[in-house]
Image 1: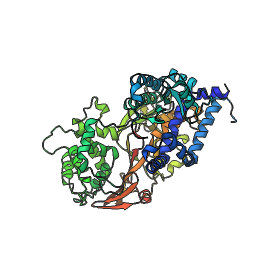
Image 2 (image 1 turned 90 degrees about the vertical axis):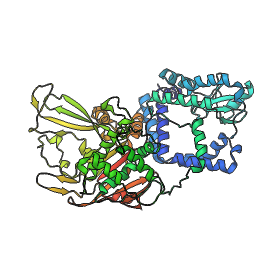
Image 3 (image 1 turned 60 degrees about the vertical axis):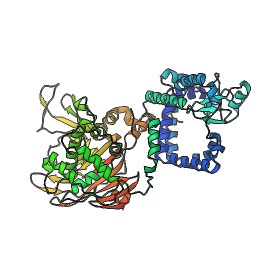
Image 4 (image 1 turned 135 degrees about the vertical axis):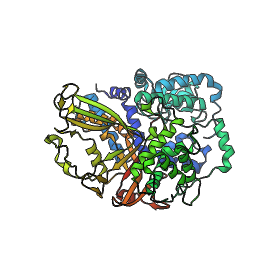
Length: 95
Length: 505
C-alpha cells in the first residue's frame, strides 16, 4: 500500500475522512470559529444585498480570513490524526 | 441569490429520484460497500484532483468535476446539462442560477440521508426543527405578543424570599430553574398532570415556578407553595430548621420523579423515561474482583449525583497491598479531578471485609472499583464537606478547584477497560474515534451551590449561569452579577455540569 491514489482511496473507504471531518467541525464549533465565520458571511450578504451574492462569491471572499482564523491547536490535532492514519496505512513510522 | 430556482421545477420529478439515490449512496453512504464506491468515484474527471471540497456530480449523467475552476462548467456547456450536487454536502447546484439552490423535498431527502450516514459512522444525529404550517400560523398570529430578548435581559432571573431558613431550598430551585433541558421541558409545557387531588403535584409547581421566573417581574418570588408541597411530600424536611441543600436536592428529584410518572409512563421501572430520569440519571458500575481467583462480579446502580470524599482518607479498611494504596492516598484532594480520580480508583476492601466469591465459593479478600457506566445529561457532584463520624462533626473548608469545562472520559467504564489493555499504554495518542467519543463526554459548569458558615449553622448561596456565559449570584432575594472567576474561586458544595453536546436518537 503506498501510492497517493491508493492512500486517498482508503482514506475515504475506511471512514477516516468522515470521522476527521466530524472531529474538525466539532472543534470549529467549540472554538467559536463557526460563529465568527457565520457572522462574517452575514455581514457580507447584508452589505451587498442578498440578490447580489452567490455561494461562490461568498466562499471566495471569506476563505482567506476563515483559513487564518482556524486555531493552531485544531490544525495540529488534525495533522496528527492524518499522520497517524498514514503511518498505519504505510507501515512507515518516520512520517 | 434569494429567489427560489425556477429551473428545477420542470425537471423535478425525475431529478428528485436521481438526487435521492445519489445522496443516499455517494454523498452520505449508509453502508460500507457504498462508502467504498464513494472512494472509487471521488475524483474530478478533468484535473484528476481528489481533494477538492467543491467536487460535484452531474445530476443528469455520470460525470464528476470541480465546481470552483471551470471543469464542471465545461461539462454543462458541452452537454447542455444544468444541475449537479456537491459530493461533500449534497446541496444542489443550478448552472442557470449560477448558485446552489434550495428545494424542500430535496433538502428533506438530504437530511435523512445524512442521518443514515451518521448512524453508520456512530456520530450523533443532526436534528433541525422545521415548523409545520400550523406552527408557522401560530407564530404569525402571536407576533404581537412575542418578546424580543436582548442578551442582557433579566428574564429568567428572580430572587426567592427566604421563608425562615429556607436558603437550602432557594439555591436548589435556582439550580433547577437554570438547568437548560429542564427549562426547555417546562417552558414548552410538556408536563401533563393526572389530577392527584388539588394542588398536590410538585411538577405542576415547578412549571408554575418557571412561569414566574420568565414573567418579567423583578420583585422576589415567594415560594410558599413550593415549601408547603415539600413539607407534605418529604416530611423529614418539614419545619423551620436549617436543612442540607444536598439532601433537599435528592428529595426534590425523588418527589419530582414520582409526580412526573403521570406524563411519562414508565414501561420498565428500571428504565424510567420521566424527564427527571432522562436528565439526571446515570449508571454507576461497581466491579468487585476476587483477589484469589481474579473473578469479577459487576453490578450496576443508577445515580442522580456523585458524592465525593474530601480530606485525607482514614484508612479504616486497612490497606494491605502496597500497590493498591499509593502514597498520595493520604494526601487530601485539591481539585474535582483529584476527587473523581480517587472515586474511581480500585480500593482494597481489606481482610476484615471478605466477600463470598461466586467462583471460589469461599470468602476471599477483594478489591472494588467504581466507574461511570452511563453518563447523565446533568452531572451533579456533591463535595462531602460535612463530616459526621462517631467522634466528631465538622465542616471541611478545603478549597477544591473545579473547571468550567470537564471531560468525563477518564472516569467512564469504557475508558478504564481500554486503558487496562496493554497496547493502549504504548499509544498515548488518541485515535480519531476516541477523540470523537471524548467530545460526547464534555460537560460545562452551569450552577454552583456554596455553604457559608460552620456545621452548626450557616447560609447557602448559589451561582447560576444564564445565556451561555453570564453568571449571577443568587443570595435568597438578591440577584447580582458575578464573573466566572468569582464562581471558580468559590468554595463549592454542589457542582452542576451540563452535557455540552446532546445526542439525538
